[in-house]
Image 1 (tube, rainbow, N blue to C red):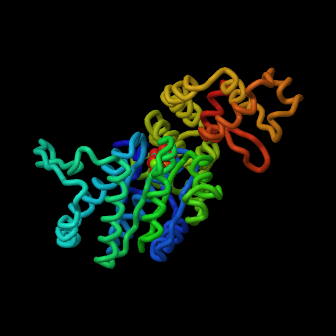
Image 2 (cartoon, helix red, strand yellow):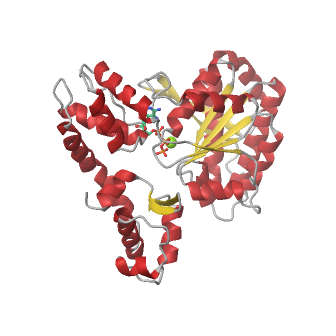
Image 3 (tube, protein in one colour):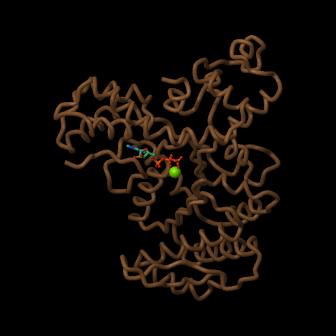
Length: 373
Ligand SMILES: Nc1ncnc2c1ncn2[C@@H]1O[C@H](COP(=O)(O)OP(=O)(O)OP(=O)(O)O)[C@@H](O)[C@H]1O
Ligand SMILES: [Mg+2]
């Protein structure tokens, strides 16, 4: 039977572990038209959760827009993505289409372009009506038009900007202020989602930033142990294999309930196990998982400087409360020059964090690999 574990964003109707309270609380914030910052380390399930939430909201009649800002490297590109996402929803939802047609009449910034496509009959993209309009004006217009639409139709709207921290890569751009201005005028719930926590949280918690205190902070936690254990048992069963509870407990523990690694380890275990999963399969599955994850880890390390790598390796084997203490630096032969910069940089990249007064590697499996497991 096919492997029942999934290594990508979970589509809304696929089996999903827990997140019941989160769905209820986030749904309530959406109902209240509140803005939310949803944050966690990478691969904790933010996007999967948002997809599910928006699917539920859409069933309740919400107008749901999902925009991914990942590597959106210009203002033009951001405007295009927002516009394309709006068109996609209007296109998918028949009942909204009538309203959309009315919307199209006032929509002057982008136009949809339909192209024949072998798979779905046609595909569509959007392009700006004016090729000379500056990117920031395109954003202004699109946000303005969205506001008009929401207001005129008095529709419940839920808008997600995923990987929102990416906008801070646009140096010297007024984009933060422009988005903030429109968002605060709209009767809609905006969710700002991201995994580069230092950068994202600074946008909302620093006094001099346009988004200062404009949203509810909502950290996403790892999966609860008990629920993860029964999820794993159920999924193995679905794939035609039996996973004893104590083995599922070990899997959950081995990955510290980290959503992605729970799926990835279970996926690898499923590949090698007999009909009944054994404890010995865990280590073999773990090694196989690392064998494929290491390429990603190597790419991360390649982008770092010597002092940054040295500090990462030190923290992988020896988490500590004071990185800058002479004793710690001597113990790990860290040179004083640049250590503070290295720490700040690694924190910005969300590779290390201070948790319960201790600096440690954010991703425990990456930590294992760094420590030479
Ligand atoms: N509730 C859940 N139950 C089971 N598996 C989950 C759950 N949430 C996420 N996962 C798994 O975790 C992985 C990461 O999910 P997702 O891409 O949604 O996370 P993310 O936080 O958006 O990641 P990134 O920070 O990379 O954008 C996927 O493999 C998915 O299968
Ligand atoms: Mg995501």
